[in-house]
Image 1 (tube, rainbow over the protein chains, first blue to last red):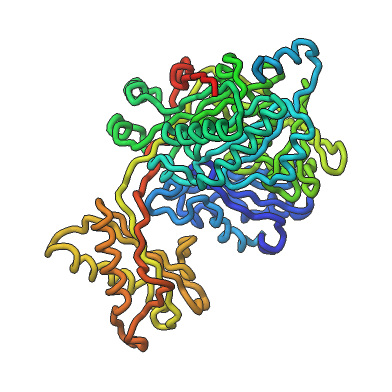
Image 2 (image 1 turned 135 degrees about the horizontal axis):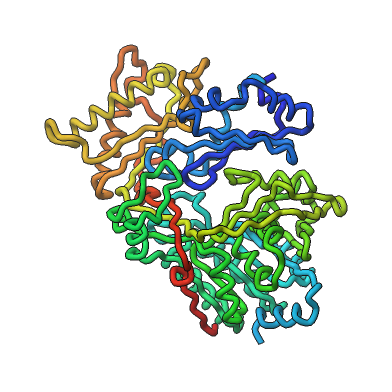
Length: 100
Length: 466
């Protein structure tokens, strides 16, 4: 199953102007567990999608909200020349196809 | 007696009293729903708070001193909150005035506040917190090694500090508490931590800081923590162990799940709320439904920092920006658009620069439909039917940027390529001129953390009777 098939929310947003943060949220425990336990959910898989080193990607399960948080550095500070998405709200899309 | 003095007196008489706080808006100036603000006022809260700013809007507003919101709506929102707070004689606390919280933003906000007071016949004691960072203090911190990069931006240098168009610090709860000591009715702060708006009065009254910071972080976004999330005012009822959240819009429910999930929002770490004065750890927090629309939150733990810090935000001018807006529906132009726009960059350089001269501007294309929003490594499997072409030029002057944009328009319109069918033009312009002046471009030049022993001198408080 792809993330887009099992997630309730997949969103991206700035966490300050230097980082992007992604929230993957699930409607039930089964889909949350499927995501958290998937070998696809790892820094080495996600880092190249955003052109950043794997050791800069932080993945954090947040079971109380059946959610997973991913945080990584932006390629350009928000709104500085070269940026594509000042609020960072449309950077979640490549994650939708992750096979979990 | 001022609103703050009155509140202090009430709590002295009854220390077990609960504190009712209203987060009126997470971004003042876009409109506050009147029905839910009216409901918030009917609940007889002890304070009203509003946040006006963020770095979300990018470096431009910090750099150019303008508000991101319209003057008309900003004044309307300010008037609604001032009238509401004065009608109940409760404190109104506003942070990050005028979108970015530097001197010009704060002064423009204060001018509106004074104007509203005159027009509405309101009288109050106003405390103002300024957040512009003295350059000599920041440079001394750079020299002393008291400055920490948060990644991506290089270490801050004295040259960069001097070059910044604006340089502010985020005032912490400490600054708001100092303002409260002046017994005001209204506090308006320049750039500030959004938590300070809501944590200062509880801190003054001695509420434990763990739940206080957790509450402050949630209600600064108004009803965003609800299901469905939204921009309506939210009420928090704080006791000594926790707080109960309720949206002032009956259609929004604060559920244990929706409130817990809000800890994720815009935060790098959902378990920690990092403040200048310490860290609130919400890992062990409990979320319990009071009823269908209310959730009680408790259990956050406050860890004071061993070293106080101030987060700096600086914006530096890059140049003047012009943009070109156009579209195309031609399948052959779309198929070659990446390459063709690169070719036109070279064509334009030869036209606007002398032989062998490097460009004195930057010209970048964004091809919407192909890879403008996200930098896809591969072209789309099925080419889009249409694309939108945005060219961005940054040069030292507006005239120069427009020169480049106009030549780009003409030469992209008529750029020839093998197999071209539409020899009268590659582009559709939605209107003319398709080249627009987009103002001064800025970049974030500082987003660093400065260690300070005493933040008070950096965030001076002044009081005036309005």
